[in-house]
Image 1: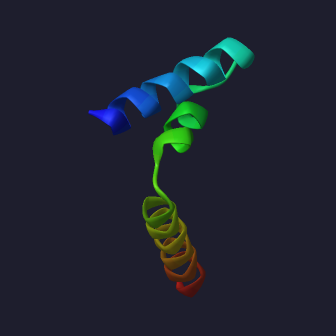
Image 2 (image 1 turned 180 degrees about the horizontal axis):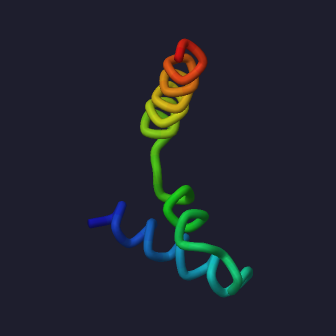
Length: 53
């Protein structure tokens, strides 16, 4: 429950400070470092496959 409260607080603070933030930017505030690394690895893999074709 604490994580949910922290995440919601972080989102509300970000929107209050920068109302023009996109949904994607807000999502990026919530992902863990491990999830970010997985996303980066996925994008890198897709780029490698794309270059091979």
